[in-house]
Image 1: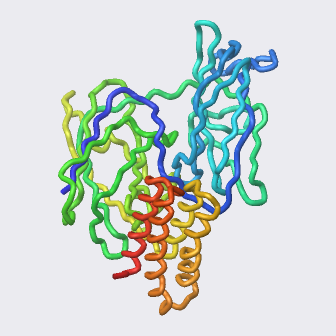
Image 2: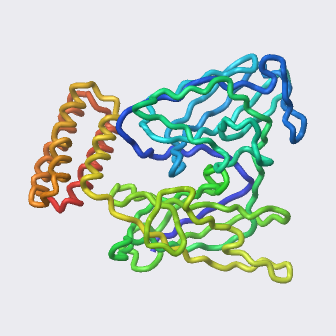
Image 3: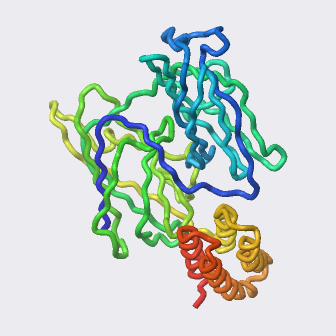
Length: 384
């Protein structure tokens, strides 16, 4: 049995850089963000009347997040003066995104923090604009590769403060959706349900290994505080080997989904804690997560995407793409008898990675990633 301990204290908003879902083609999102004071015609936050102080300097972070699975695809550190900050995020795979701002406006010795998702709507309908459901979907596509935002006014929206109550245990059963076999060595992400940010937990893992003939144990503990909301999270599981597609925990289903909106909300405190006569009682939850294997054809496409994002010289990329293009054709020609020919192509791809690494045309880290993916694809194909 593998056991994972989660520890948490006060609410903290952290940035998690997770692997993106890469599509063909690259585009960019650029533009300007401005404070409510921009142009001298301040419109204060209608909720509390604040936000009109001049921003002598603006600093902060922009997250570009996949609009489906909430994975952070890119981050950009922002810096501007006199109520305006420019940004330009390039190299984005074609797809749909949501943008999250976390900015600090400073003037003299005072400062204000602005945290919200981008939406062209003039007024945020919530008390806090740091809401995934509020965010506008930003498309980057072949027909429109450059998305521009002009003078978007960020509002005075301090982040909501959540804290966690109590302590308890969660047990996960992570299984293949087809044969129900247990899947070892899975990585877990716990995301706050309202803004898809990493939940205030730290993970440590021990007793890793074995075939997991029983559910993997997840043990978490929190400081007990009265008068707090229990932290509600969505749980994402990732197979680092790439054999299985990432998926969120979805209750009572055998159809895995990597869609943040479809994920089941787990109320950490309610799940495991009950207060009886003002005494904390600890109980456990059992969650079953199903994962689906990534077909070899898709694994080859993922390798092509990884090659494209490795920053290689054009000639090196072409040499690596050659066996992958042929492999992709064999795996999608609707003739299963041709699939065995892919084994030799994967060996050629592996040899080419090592050749490019020896020439210094590919970094050691990129080579390691590509080799791991190639070996996993070979295994999925049943190659000797």
